[in-house]
Length: 93
Image (tube, rainbow, N blue to C red):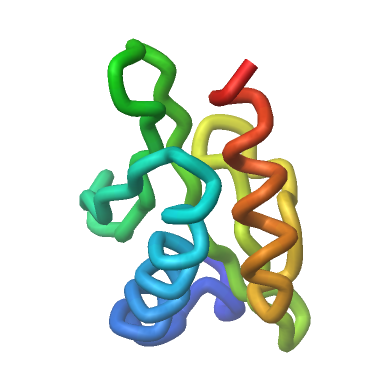
């Protein structure tokens, strides 16, 4: 683990909780879970088997939302609404 990843767990949790709230208007549901000691947001479209997991990473002084399976960035954590749209879009199709 790099020093940039050594950040308080509650900071990650707070960011994911804010993202969870932003997902509500997108007609998807999020639940914070833990995988390997890190909180992740498990996002589902109700009534389907579509699921995505989102994490948060701290890189060079900036928090990012990332896809948990690939680490690919979704949006900076200060763009919660944009991240919610990007996460929900493939689940709605």
